[in-house]
Image 1 (tube, rainbow, N blue to C red):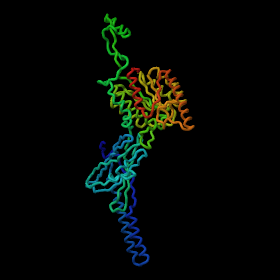
Image 2: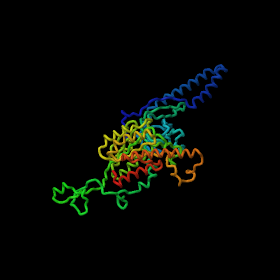
Image 3: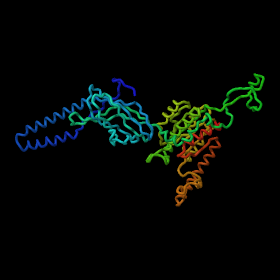
Image 4: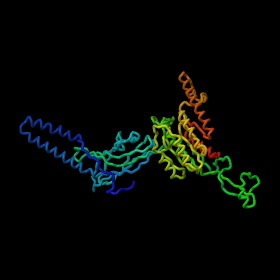
Length: 484
């Protein structure tokens, strides 16, 4: 939070209004009305009634003028950007400043126009001065020019939210009025995916200390990246002999290869209409509606962490009816922040995906062979046909893995014979038809897998409960076997 100069401060007064408090109508009803009745019934009391009315009106007017004159004294300082995590309580902190020298004690009520996806914390509200509606009650001590305050907020959806105004209410000096003001604040709140709970589900994968010490994973093959030349040793393969170096040195020279460490990994996320389908899991919070795109985003970021630990460069692309974002593969902690910034506000769009546009875009941008991990839905026959038609633009140069979340009930007919009786039981005719329909859908996806395999593309149905772990396992298997 950086200080701003007075002349360019954008936190200014928008509107001040006065609302009568209970004290003003109570005095009118208790004093003026009886005096008016008495003045009408008893001659000679008209002057007293008029005098009390004039006095009350003067006091109310004077109190209103004082309340309006106190408006410019209070100012607020909000940070330009507040970063929070989805489903995790965080603080929306700000400062309240009184520009008046020797500021007296004041009682204020503050409020923001909260979006439905941001819930002000309600635990122990009375102790913190927070009403059930998210209003903050503040008692400013006398002589304190600057006070730090905060709302505790629990975001329920990731994305970008804006607070443009802070609403403030303060009683007047005599208690006749409530002065209500709106202050322009211009605060942006960014809610990022909750990687903590998702990483906990894939904890076993992250416990491996890849590539170091006694926990090194066995590599299959000898590597493809050229490292150096050395003299020929009996037993070296003939294809490893460097004939040009042999001709120059007049003795046999062999090429030495090493396992490639810095490879490029791209995740391509489909944010079209089918990504908005709900993808709940048993351990999700009650009432939470989590879409397939939400699973894609969190799994992508955790895969980026896995690639970073492996020493690979990570990049991503998002598309729907057109390519929405592209981050070129790089490494380092700063690059992870770049990927997170590119994904935190990504939302589903009600359009069909354009696979031709996405494949052509990646074909032009990616010159070096890379691992492309597609996260999309191919259970729609028309979309699967379009994907098969255009993926050849990429599969001839790159290693392509296509992953689809398994739709509910889509599995082989007798795949769950070992499951619990309550989940495997077929008790009604509807259960029979539901199982048969799930088997037919699974069979269609198997045909899609066979067609893609003929083009060198690997297709997988992933479970929503273990999406992250399965994605990272796919990536590690590619690294271990040096398929890329």
